[in-house]
Amino acid sequence: MKRLLLVGYYGFDNLGDELVLLSTLEFIKAHYPFIEPVVLYNKDIDKIYGADVIPRKNLVSGISRIDGICFAGGSILQDVTSLNSLLYYLGIILFSSLLKKPVIMISQGIGPINTFIGEKLMKLINLVYSLSLRDIGSKELLMKLGVNKPLMYVGSDLALFYNPGKVEISDNLEDKILVSVRPFPGFDEDVMISALKEAKERYSVNLCFLVSHKEEDLDISKRFTQKTGGDIFFWDNIEDVINSISSSKLVLGVRLHPLILSALLEVPFIGIAYDPKVRAFLSLFPKMQLLELTGEEEDIESAIISSLEDREILKSHIKDVKEKLLEKEQETFRPIDELYNLWYKDR
Image (tube, rainbow, N blue to C red; front, side, top):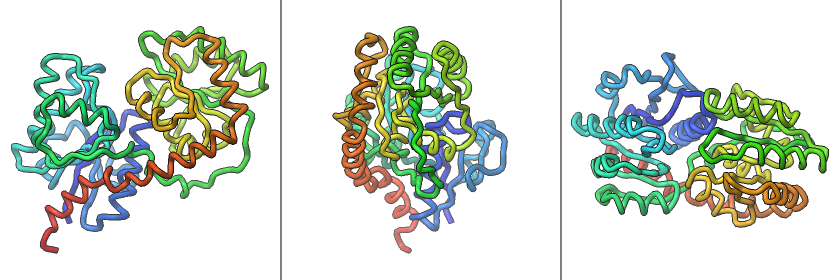
C-alpha cells in the first residue's frame, strides 16, 4: 500500500476546497485500492472524511512518512494573495523532489503570477512528474513561464466530479436566490445590494447569503444581509450547502464553487468575474450570465430577471454542458493513474 499526501488549501473553512478534497478522496477510494490517501490539513486532528491527516505544522516530518505527493485542485499556485503562499507550495515540490518522492498535480488553476520572483520560481514545477490543469488558460500560462517537462493534460475542476447522489436532496423548490459574496478590490457592494433588493421586491423572493469562507466572507455577508433584509447561511457540511442550492431558484456567486455546485445540481447561476477562474468556468456555459465587479445596477437586474424567467431553458443548457464536462474525468485524474502505474507497473 502506497501513501499519497493530498496537498491543497484544506482545513481553512473554505467551502470550495473542502468540496475539492471530498471529490478527490471519493475518486481515489473508488479507483485505486492500493493507494491510501493522506491529507495535509490545517487542523490538528487525526482524520478528515475518513482519511488520515498530517497537520501542516508537521509537514516536513510528514513528507518523510509518505510515498508521493498530489496537489489536488484549487488556485494555490499564484502570488496575488501572497508570495509567501506560492513559496510554501513550491517549497513542498522542491523538498519532496530532494527526498525522491514523486509529485503529481491534478486540476490545478494556475496564476495570476505577477511578481518577478514568482515567475522565475514557477519553473520548479518542471520537477513534477505529471499534472492536469482545470482550464486551457492555466496550461498556456505554465508554458509561457517555461514549464514544459511534466506530462500535461487539461481537464475540469475537481468539484465537478463530486457525487451529490449520496445526499438526500429535498424536492422542495423555495422562492429563494442564494448569493455568495466575498470582499475584493473594486467590488461595488452598494450597486449589487440595490439590484438584489429590486429583484427581491419584484419577484417576492427571499435572499440567502452563503458564507463560503467562514473567515473572509463573514463581514461582507452580514452587510448584505442587513441591507437587503435577507438571511445568512453558515455551512457545517457539504450536504447542507447542496440542499440549500438545490432548493434555490437561482444562485448568484462571486465565489467559484457555489457556481460549480449549482452546475452539478442543474440550478441556474450568475457569476461575478472577480478572478480569471470564474470567467473561465462561465465560458463553458455560454447561456449563463457573467457580470463584472463594477457592473451597472441595470445590468445586474437584467441578468437576474432573465435568469429567473428563462429558468427551465437554462436548466436544460446546464445539463447538456455538464455531461460534456464530466467526459473530462479521465484527463483530470490521469496523473494519479500514471503515478499508480509507476508504483505498480509489475502488478
